[in-house]
Image (tube, rainbow, N blue to C red):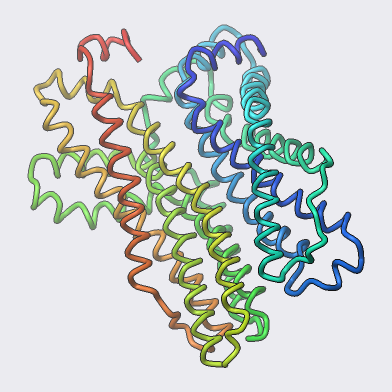
Length: 456
């Protein structure tokens, strides 16, 4: 199985680019915060007493836990699409007597090989980032001047172990579709889509939604003197709500598309009608494309609005002395989360569009031109971006409202309109070009040959 796994990676290297980037970011991030923890452990007691602020352990722990959760989300997503591009090969293995256990072992081999491939560059990037981050903390008085990042390999090995654990857990989630059904059914599963989400998935989504609501309640009930705890609970709550969106995504995406698609069908009767029909007919595919956009908008919006609200509350209470440092920490955390979310968004959109080659070829055989297909894809891209922005904005509003209750007593947070507008523009700038550029490549080639499976 290891040889087959490596053979698949050599045959389809593009399928593993998104997974490799996600694992690289995960290794670098965990190495960064592991190195900060090691610096705190090896620092002299006198140095620790001279530092102001929450300390390296608290900063690394708060940043690290969120980064690991987001990394797991992104790795599961990237691995899922790597498997979807191998679906027929894996299904064929099932038909020639490969067991589900053997298929899972093959997928685990691919994850381990990819993680080992990106480990060294991830270690280097994480170590460099840790030193620069520590220097910045020292400049701001949040770390003692005598603290140094040790040269021990322990943080790097711990980072690789943590990322391998995340990758193997992601394998169990992502490989379920091809291993839980009969071998013959697996061959046709990639070209079909269930009309409804399963009851277990909807129940899980409801449970996660309740969990997110409880975290937001925890954030809202924090004392005003504990803005950091309230902010961390609100940010974690927003991530949990986004996971709930991913679980209940297909029916939610279909319902929202029905609402947004009506004016589109009127404005663009041909391309709009076909785009709307595609999006509603393939709700799972639409959900896969929308959720990363919602992740990007939801996390970014939550962080930006919470930072603005905290600044406003500090100004009102004349305690703005530490607000610059707090803002810098939030902006650093935001940059980290945006990197993960952007990777997930671009990888998902490219994978979702690229796997529609045969669909586009069939439309060309029945008379559609390349220009008409690109018009349809443009409408789909705009609707996908709009759905992702709406879902992400809803999560950001709920999370930031809970945080605002904690720090100001009001459920109306301070919204920086210009910055939020740039977040929306950024989401659209990632979504629309990724779909159109991939679509341009997907509509090339002889249509009859693509429909017949001659090219993939």
